[in-house]
Image 1 (cartoon, rainbow, N blue to C red):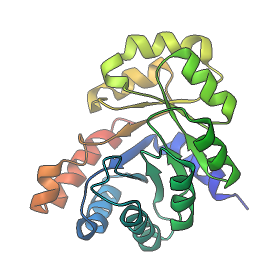
Image 2 (image 1 turned 90 degrees about the horizontal axis):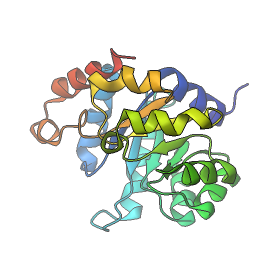
Image 3 (image 1 turned 180 degrees about the vertical axis):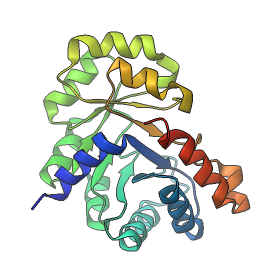
Image 4 (image 1 turned 90 degrees about the vertical axis):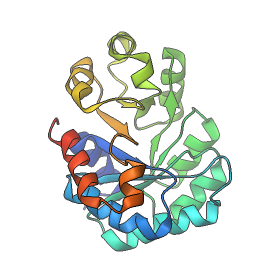
Length: 217
């Protein structure tokens, strides 16, 4: 029987898109996630709020609600994880993977200790190799859209043994180009989770945005 960690790694490699959910109210979270599911999304990252407007406790409650609601149909992770204590909270809530904007040895090692998938953020070759050496399962190149596909290709070429994701600023029409450059998947936020649509409750619109991305995989 596969472990949850193995399932998540395989899901990332298969579905390739992790949708980032940031700043969405608790009452809109499940309908939003269902809309994403209808659009072909199978991985959702709920972010911690580094500014503290949403407490860590509220964030883990949202993670727990999604884990309970989907019961394995959707793989739920935690994002913007900056401390080992947030890793532990996310694990208790049922998150299966941990995503960070940076490369923190403490966060990676805590993630591995708890049997979760580790996806730290990095930009330079040194940061990418350091994250992998600490035990990352994937390394997210961040911000990939700003850096551009030429940069990502150049960095990946000598580091083909390290599975990387392209996160932030990657549009639907660029997915194929980034995949050809060697990335294994993507983290997509506002291009799918359009806050105007969420506020209006236009979940059909969210599903359509999700399909624009999933149809390119």
